[in-house]
Image (cartoon, rainbow, N blue to C red; front, side, top):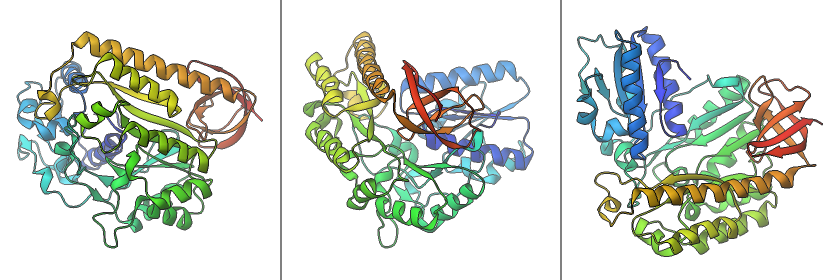
Length: 417
């Protein structure tokens, strides 16, 4: 990651930070520090403000530019910080001229109407740490309106990168030595609805794997359970290069809470997706995003979410304590006490740790294929389980067969097979 770009939030932000860093280098903007913000939670915004203040203390002569979703949604609030010199929107941050303008000509706030955006910028990032795993944006924006979520107002409507451009980028990354690519976006299962012919995500994946035969491993970022298309299901069963790991945007395991969230699935739908995935790919591992302490949630409803982890066989959890986002319907619902939210998030995380530990223990004595990401031999298996070599050596960016010999709370321990 670029040393002068501070990144908060999702993988998409990380990809865009790399684009920003390249623009800074091309413009020779050595005196600029960029803070690429996230708006998912109040905590993410608090951490960004803290980073801005620290950056100013440590770099008194630098120009500090704030961008990202939080800046897009409320630019005036960020511009009001005395440490901040400029605010740039999510469209502007990807433009080279945003970073090449002289300080005397750059507007203090440059944030256009994200809801008017109709195209996704086609940029290629070729520098990721270790040259092992690369991220390719295939989609941005979201047309849904979950009651807790402010991101559509930071990212705009759903829009897709054409298939040919995705193929071109992945081919370039494979030629540069990357062994694994992750397709990322805000709502990638909505892919293609705005493109000619309306190609689905599954059709994109099939074309990509067919046209880039040198790509060993392909992963997908978070999927909406009710939007997984038939072609993607077929690929899950037939294509070994599509990794046996799916991460689902679940959010809750209680039907009433899901309805209040305005999600389009119920708990039975999540269980059905998990069962179908295992029928097609028996060794698949499932992860999920879950929110703890949503407004009106009772302890029994929180218990339903923890039970869903077991019933659907979810292994890797991303747990978010509920955070009311200004302007969202959920922010106007009856809120739980902050300590209750923290306690429920802690209980859900502990439930997730137990599920992950059971999975780790089940892999002892089996073989796996490890993609080494660091000189220390740390990386991830095909199931996206973190693993570390304790015997033997694998060069970063290399996939090798390993034997899982032990496990701990952090993941798997392995030796070269």
